[in-house]
Amino acid sequence: MTLDASRGADAPPELVQLLTPEGERIEHPDYDIDLTPEEIRSLYRDLVLVRRIDLEAVALQRQGELGIWASLLGQEAAQIGSGRALTDSDMAFPTYREHGVAWCRDVDPVKLLGLFRGVNHGGWDPKEHNFHLYTIVIGSQTLHAVGYAMGIQRDDASAATIVYFGDGATSQGDVNESFIWASVFNAPIVFFCQNNQWAISEPLEKQTRIPLYRRASGFGFPGIRVDGNDVLACLAVTRKALEAARTGQGPTLIEAFTYRMGAHTTTDDPTRYRVASELEAWKLKDPIERVKSYLFRTEQGDQAFFDAVSAEADQLGADLRRRCLAMPDPEPLAIFDHVYSEPHALIDQERAQFAAYLEGFEK
Image (cartoon, rainbow, N blue to C red):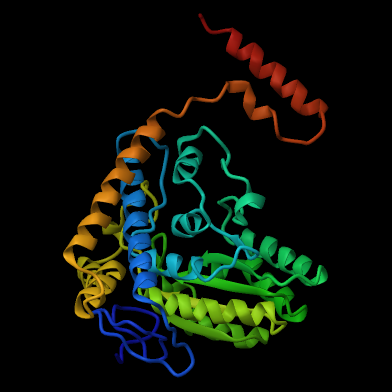
C-alpha cells in the first residue's frame, strides 16, 4: 500500500475502494453505495458478458475476420461501473476501447465488430443510444464532449456528459484544452480517465510526475482516483460526479486506476516492453473474480447463478461469431455516399475515378 501511486499493482493510499481484491466489502465516508443483491448480480453479469464479447472479438481478429481489435481485458469494472451510472439523458463520448460502456448503452456488439471488420464506419446512431461513435484520434473526443456539455448547459437541460480517454491521452493538447474550457464555463461534464498504466509501450511515468487526478486542481475542478478494478467504487464515484455536473457544480476528473491485461491492440506485443511479474500481480486484482468472491462470501450468488451466467456468455459468444461472419461486405462505391450531406464536385470526381478503376478488373 506504500508503492508509488503511479506504478505497480499495490493500491495507492488515496484510492477510493469499496470492494477489495479478495471480495471484502469496505465502507467509504464520501463514496458509499447501497445496492440490492439483484443489482450486484446484474453488475457481475455485465462484467462476464462484456469480457466474453472482448475475447470473442480477439479470436475473430486472430482468425482474420477483423482487421484489428482494441481489447478491454482488465478494464471491465471501470467501464461497467461508470456506464451504469449514466441516465438515459446523459451523453457518452468514447475512445475506441469502450465496449463495456457501449454494452451499457444498449449498442449491439455486432455493430462494434462491423467497424473493425471494415463493413461500416460505426453502425449505431449516437442519438438513439446517447453514445457517440468511436474516436480513433487520441484525445479529440474530449473537445467534442465539452462542446456538447456546453450545449446542455445552454439548453438548461438536466443531463451531463461523460468522456473517456486513457492515461496517454492526458499528454495531448486537446485534452488539456478541454480541461480549460470545461473549467472556465463550468460545463456539466465528467472526464473519465482509464489509467491502464501503458500508453501503448510507454509507461505512465513518461506522461506525468504526479498522479493524474491531481491535475484537475490546476484547472480549477475536483479530481478523484478510484480503484478501476472495483465496479462498485466506479459506480459510486461516477454517479456522484455526474450528479454534481447535472446540478451546476461543474466538471470532475475521475482517474480509474486499472491495468491493461492484454495488448494495446491486436497489432501490439506487450511482452516486448513490460515484465511478466507485473501482469501476474494485476491478475490477483481481477474485477470479475472480486465480485464473484463477494457474492459467494455473502451468499448472494450460488453455483447455479454463476453457471447460468457462464452459459449465457457462451451463447452470446457463439451468436456474436455467427452474426459477424454473416455481415455482408459493402458495395465498394458506398464509401463515397455520406462524406458530405450535399453533392460535392470533388467527391463525384473521385467516385467516377474509382468506378473506372474497378471496371478494369475482369468479371
